[in-house]
Length: 155
Image (cartoon, rainbow, N blue to C red; front, top):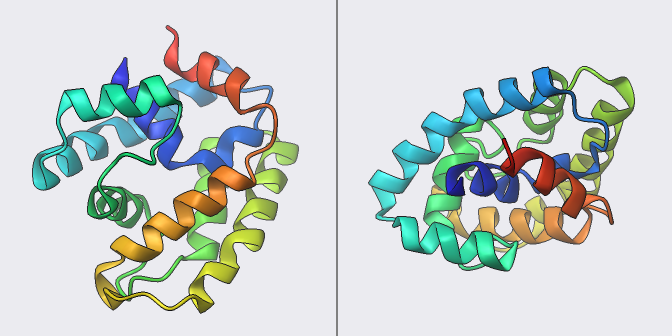
């Protein structure tokens, strides 16, 4: 299902979570699927665009302000348009019960905190910073991302 993939693509830092339980998977998807729908409508992201992202195994083709909408609603981009490192860590703890998985999410959040020092043109809107954040998540997600994507996108 495309919305499930986009959820994963936008929160790529969770890709370190290898042993995702069914309960974790269901909580993760239930918590963020409605947000994907809201942001899709708000920013005119079509099912076709989501399918392109799914096929590419990347959120690169998605509109940056759609990504910002999602990140803001889940609490990883704040009202100032900055990456909320502590918010990202809290989401890791919320969605993953395994301490090792939580620590991996925390590690990636710390690595990606450097994007807050980058200059962006849209300041509080957060679109540019969200793009930087997604790129950082993608670079640091590790080699297990494909397995996690398969777990999350298959029923």
